[in-house]
Length: 252
Image (cartoon, rainbow, N blue to C red; front, side, top):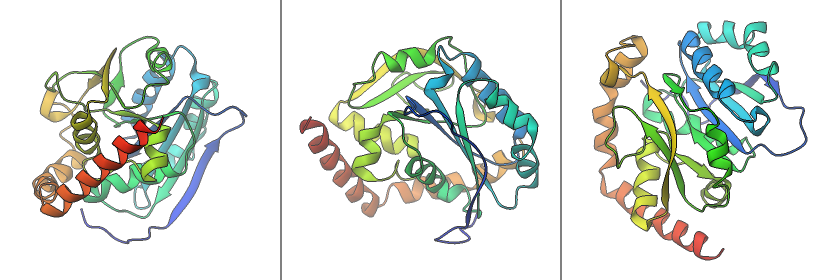
C-alpha cells in the first residue's frame, strides 16, 4: 500500500456517545473491506463484556472502501452498538495503507478518552466472558496488559492493551507494527502483565482462513515494515520511548 497523504482527510461518519462517564476501555479498530468480520468481532467484544457501558468502539476505514461506507452508515451497525450500553465512533480516513497502519491507531487513540486502549483487528474474536472485568481488576496497573491468543509464542503480545498514561506520555500509540513496538518497550522495562482472557485470531497464517485481498496486500508489505523497524533510526526512537516510559511510571 502507498501513503496517499501526510495529512489525511478525516470524516466522522457515525457516532454514539451519550454517557457522561469516561469509558474504561476504547477498542481501536482500523478495518478495510471486512464488514462481516467486523460485525462478528465487535459482537464478541460486546456480548462477552461483563459491562458493555465500560466500552467505547473506535473504528477507522479508508475513504475508497465502499463496502465499509455502506455498512458503517447503516442501521445494522448503529443497532449493533446501540442495543448495548457501549458507545462508538467511526471515521472515514483518506487511505494511508498498511505501511502506515500505526497512524490509524494513533488517530483513533488521540481522539478518544478512556482509561485503557485495546489494539484490535477485524479478524480477532473475544472468547472469554467478562474479559473487561479482568482489565478493570488491573485498572491501576502501569504497563502493558495482554491476553492469551492462538498462534503466537507464549511470551509474545498480539493485542496489547495500554493505559491512558501511555497515550498521554507519547500522544500516540506507537510505530508500525504497534503490537511489536509496545511489547519491545514494556518488556525492556518489565512492566507487562498477562491476564486470563482469551482471543481467537482468525488470521490466514494461523488458521488458513481469510486469504483475501486485504491479507494479500498486507503480506506483500510486511517485509518492508520489518526492514524499516530494524533501522538505526527506529532503534534510537525506541530507546527514547523506553526512557520516557520509565520516567513516567517512576513519577507515580
